[in-house]
Image: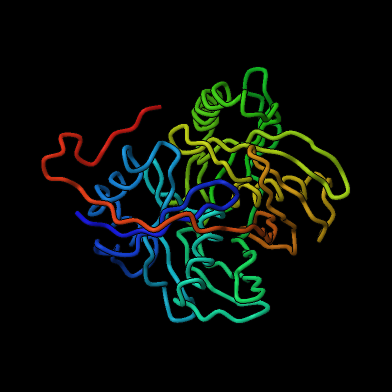
Length: 321
């Protein structure tokens, strides 16, 4: 194998974009392409995510054709345990890459880009100044609260959907706490799923608790919270988590903490920042939902050609966690 990638980070979270050397996932919809990636291309995911070319916290994507001509891009996201239904930091990086590379025409001021992701169609707007993409804002699929105040032992957990399902729990967020939070995240994910099947009411393929968001208060005016999201198989999001931000916005809107249109300043564990707000109402199969927008910035970190020596006994690679 000889696979070409371009790497970005969004708020410190890596994003590896496959640009050549491999067949792209096939299918009539993004969810079909996601299934095809699992069936035919999982060795590529392992090759790019696993050590020694990646690491347990690597994230990436295949760029695919959108569902129809009304969108500019399609994407299948991947991580250490498989293929996610949503990825906010990846959407921000992907749109930045598409404008940097001329895949989509870049216009000074604001450029509108439509992206099909597994959870649905996203409108995004890139802020372009002096020919550079400074930030990307995406309007997410409807976010909604699944459950509030779930008592799991000594902890109270809320569950909300922001493109994927996230459990939220208030905990101290600091790098020194990560080993404990990783294990706690794994435990809480299993406990929530044992308590109740968590399944999207419209698209059954969007199911299960994807991540656990640990959050703490940081201040007011604007409302500021810090979080770290543990997702997939103990993977740690360095960014404030884009789809997780949408889930948090649904909960904050429901509780009345965040007025409509007001900004949430959402900080990640490394100090990076997303800005989010609720911009409208929605409905998901009778469930009250909200429309959210999340904004952040991505930066290119490298371009790579990864190869596999046929004599390499480690093959696709390995993970240590």
